[in-house]
Image 1 (cartoon, helix red, strand yellow):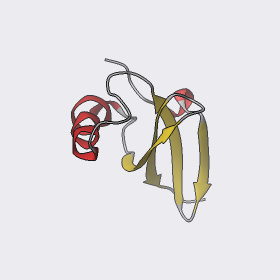
Image 2 (tube, helix red, strand yellow):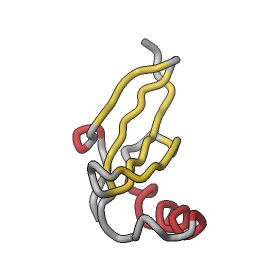
Image 3 (cartoon, helix red, strand yellow):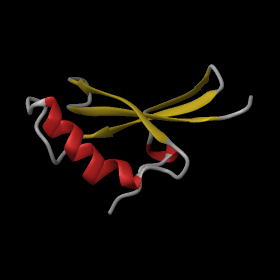
Image 4 (cartoon, one colour):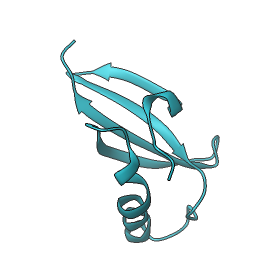
Length: 78
């Protein structure tokens, strides 16, 4: 299974004591599925494979990328 890391991100940054990165999931689920289905897909198929130490923060659909933008974060001293 694919590992989701900072190197794969479309955006990353540091904000309020945390490092975050955003990656695109562009296959596996349709954007018009019920949010519960999207949540379950993320929990089972994506989140177990994010870079160690990072936790889920948000998900939004992107017309630009034609996929879900998944944002994950972890606490980090600056």
